Length: 393
Image (cartoon, rainbow, N blue to C red; front, side):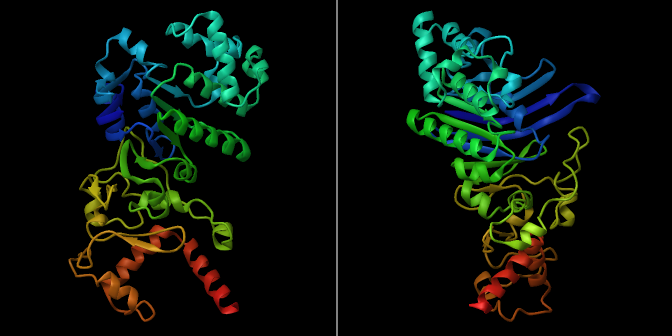
């Protein structure tokens, strides 16, 4: 349904050019849900706007955005208007700012139906009532203005507008931002139900890795305008292979773990300025397990197991990522080399001898350092809590 190939987006030109998206490749099948996660400023919303060519005039777009095999980037203006809302629609970030404050809700939902000539005025108004019921709003809300609705109700109106013309693809940019936890759960269940019922594709963008892992089939993590990890959503959340993905996952507290509650993990520093990106791997200034080569050599996406990719050199040398339940996953064979070229011990052997690890083995020490850095300081408290509970039992 959707195939994004080497997408590059730049704001400005010449010496003032700012690369916002740098060579993104993504695919989405009908009925599939793709989540996109990352910190503020990493290029998520720019990517979402580019999928329907909604970028401001000063932006330069390169690459391909194939929607059912047709390139959105080269579409004629008339064809593009026909595709928007009917072929693909978007739920914008911040419903209050996306709705027209001086028009009633029913008229705003009706507008795309009339523009695409899917129904006349009378039939269109019946369609509006059906859509409001479909998203769990009373029909009487059609005569209300946006300011008369709560945040969750406005978000439901945006979803109703996105469904008005029966599109094949929905792009949801932060659909649960600024909503309380209960309303978030309702909106997410609503989106999941609509996707399953209609068989449409969903691209969902969020800061919340836990929400994406629970809602989406696949997950792509973006840093500084590039995808740094991609794979099945639950696998990426539970056992990220890229240090950035591990840090995002580790930022969420663990229920029942006092160590993560009193000492929450996080990632020091700020995302880089897109106008002045670091050399080599753009994440290396913040990476706790960076190698000397990371400062000079860009890291492409590497195969990291079935259906998984990660842009980290440690994928080649057997990077260990700690999952949320404390277990470790490892990509690569046991004969992977350490940073000095020494041979690391076999994974099965090291786990068997875990009770009495060799204290002076440099390769094992470095592997443990990488694991500890990726998992964060909260794991120590987690392990201690587990040991205490085991002793008490």
